[in-house]
Length: 576
Image (tube, one colour):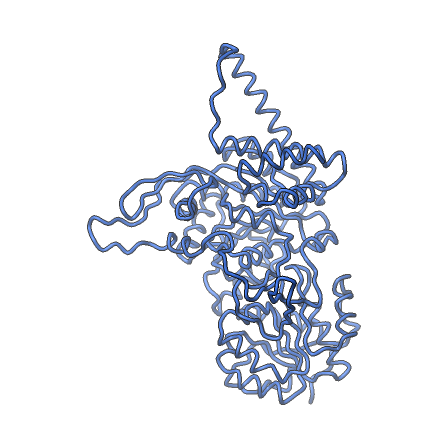
């Protein structure tokens, strides 16, 4: 007996963007449709509603969903079953055809790439809708892209979904439309776009606070030379990579201090109205992940769940954590995209991955809103490239073909090289060794603006930021951060006055010259104060004022700006 057609009346109400995109889809009735929507916006629900509409009116007889990972296959099948669409998540290439008990199957891009002819035959047998989830993965390798194109060209409908910036390489993405711009370059074109800023305005996603931690790091190179650097200060990319690696070393003090701060923030959220709030540490490799889990147990007294690879047991461990009230999950990359754990509200970005694509995927795990006022907090190293990505959360990126490939921010090859253990072969050669690292809260980034000045870990100044209420609107977050910063600056001025009084130094004594780091902090502080004043005069959000200054003056977000760029913005904001 044929499987029953899903009943449209059983579907949950659609969000505004989903309704608009559905109307546009049904109006066009085109073979190909690309929907870009920020993580947490509800792409799965949107796609399943389209599948139900097409199955109900007879436009298609079958549905194939292509997902990036094995875990997401299970997630898609479960979501579809809840609305009456039966998808076979256990389909194997050797099966050739799905059972008559199913409307279709869920497969991975790797499955399609291995045997595109199998999926082409399945697609030709019945009129098929193909849903390509996180379509940018079809460009991961030429085999995958060619396989997807060969397998699904016969489909009567193709729906492409993505929630993250498109690729930075030149691999064309199958079935995505490209248009030539005025500069002669081809850019991907989406039929429906729902960005993070739109979703934040609608209350669909949570505001994200980025707490960036700097600190002093010391390490020994493979040549035996000892080096020291302050994380977050301007350095060569080699030094940034090595200081970053030193900070993330489980044996140092930086990670325990940051984990302690993140757990304190998690406690605040749990006590403020999110009793099941969970935290996720994203690690670079399996060995480090296990070490972080031990650190969490030492810091909190509670064991952390650990997901090390995308194997058969990983899906069960993720599902168990999602349904529990366990505080912490440690994972290696696989929980970075598509995995749905709505209670995740605190993150520790302890990985070497630094591309815009990966960063957006990772932050997407924390933004799904369940009730008004929920906020997310992500702790990250104070590395210039990461600070820039945090400041540009709302940026919308297209896939550009033919553009000269300048490195997009940080040089991942250098970081990967620094992250690997050197295989020393002679007695005189020594492996890279992280010697020490301490953490301090450098700044808080929200809505493109930077707040706060340096605060040592474990001090009342740090606790002021960690203790921000857990249920706040975006406007309340910005207002409270500005107040915290003002209080912090006032306390610093009082302490400076007290020190001058106690020392009774001659009035003519020249002030000690500031280092470049101190000068940048002072200028950033001055710029934030002027932006806050402009906000109170005009009512414009802090982020929009910072964005306007960047438009006028050029340059990166203030978290990354040079001394000269900060000085130019200070002069400019005084004229607005």
